[in-house]
Image: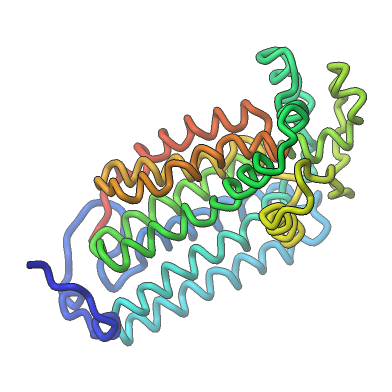
Length: 333
């Protein structure tokens, strides 16, 4: 019978990590930086190069560079702590720091890409061509029930559950897979972030307001250029404004949302990725628990006007592709 982990086990020095290990090309051994940390370093380096090449277009490029130094210094500090005390609890802190820092890196995509100019007019036109309408405009208008509204916002907010619960379960039950699972998640997130920088699409909630609802309803999609370089205004979210999940979503939106990151939908991509990981690891109970929130999350991205329908469809495809790309890489354990 497999022994269950106890709280004290998380503070015990892992003697097995003292040994030099062999493995694939990613990772630097037990006492080196783990693969998810290397993914963060790579993202910081890629975005630093983009900032250098577009230096004169930024209001405060030096600040953007310094943000990278401060973010990576936290990673290095936790690595040093682990060198001194290699236990599961410190490893959990290393992983937790990387996940928390995703919220730090996200607004950064807006600061870098806002000088390029919005591409929403192109994506809205594609949406019109494919669906002969704007699903993000009509979805919430057709379904006005308070119950539907709350289910949509519940599904949208469950996004955070998806990428937090899997590392937590891995820490508790599949510790040998913790690095790999987190690497797949972090690598996928950072890939999406790079796409957000290179393809600045703000999504319906921002573009519809800037372009004018009447224009959108009539199938007219003007090029608004660098409108969002100086404006972060968006439409009021549709649905039942008295609902608790509506208020939670509004609170989260106000805390960190920016006119960026619409294509592809990282909500759908990461949630799909998690479902794929659970399937691969045969975590059937987790799949059943997440199935309903996943369904509502995919629909909610369009319902609340955060994404065009093509963003969500592409997000689903991206999640599958990213799973095979990062899941197929060998890690040095």
